[in-house]
Image 1 (cartoon, rainbow, N blue to C red):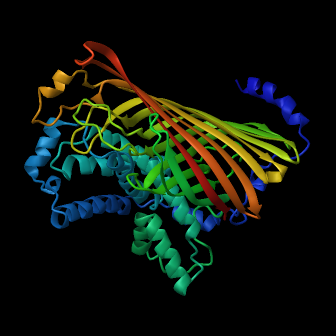
Image 2: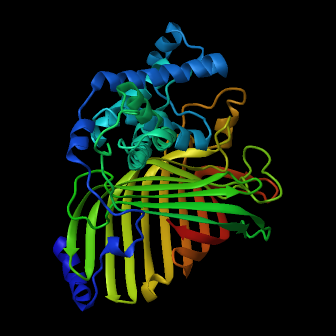
Length: 514
């Protein structure tokens, strides 16, 4: 396979006359600098009992807040509830999409960073995330332990946790003092509270050293912030339009083509979309792609090509712009899409090709397995839940063409998800048999769901690092439900019922590269 890639791309690589240095073509916030060896040795010294105490203490603190401040019914635990949890075992829960797909993985990131900030590496810290999640599910709630949480919390927590750990690392400088030092430590706390707690416990938060105290030095880092307007339109052929403000944060950390590596997340990308728009969620999208290991296949002055294993964390959220909501549990809802994949990984390839000094091409492709994901359900609606748990696969690909030294860029990206739920309801009668009870231990509706997101974007540099950006997005979902649907008015029934939903949006933004 490696020989085939080289054979196909080598003529193009030889034809180019200019270097294709990915770092040189990015605007970097600071010059790359390796970590000081003394800092690395100190920060990789393991402290098991401190990490375990932080994991245990966080769970106790969160439980106390839920029990004595919020007075949540789930926090009234006893030896009897713990016994029942072990006796009953795990089941699928019915929390909000945002709770299960984002909030719980964020909690997992705190468990993860209890290990990471006490000397453990990426894989070892995952064990603290698993342990913290298991403790909470089995001991700290009177609700039965959750199958989805024990998967999403530690795996999604590792993705979020490593991104936040490395982001907080960039802010540290143990040589500073006074107001600057306080500001740095406060920012570290905002990004990674458990790491900040560890620094307070050890005294590192105020101790001055001759070295910066960073675990990773200053790797290549690019940050883009875009602000502008977003218009939602053509929702399921409805001509209604809704307009609001939008913001996008894009981060590229590390070197795309840094040679062969086995260091997880020495390269990752983060994309986050925030909206201020009536009826729409503020957090509409998060995407993390973190490299776990890679092999450089082509490394020449004109072309770079690498393949690797990547972890993916995806979250898409939307609400309807239609005038009304569906009535009854068996009317397809007006929401176009909701999707999350907190546990996903696969193989990916990245290509950089510079044909002339005035043209460059960046491209990528990923094939992923989705261990656990969630996708909007049109029929399963109970408590806070309106989605089906599922597993499946995803395909991602994209390309960016830069013209005139980057003055003009044209980008296209597509993400395709195919998700299958296998434990759920298959008929209206099955649901109606339990009208006053909690639905059974199910993933939702038995279904096969497809979700596709296509984006075209055009950027024009206005002045130095300031650009104007025009983007169009198409979100398409269709779901096959393995069930009979009756239509008495039309006097017919159908099996394998299909719901098809579309949403278009247009974004006009100003982008600044820091």
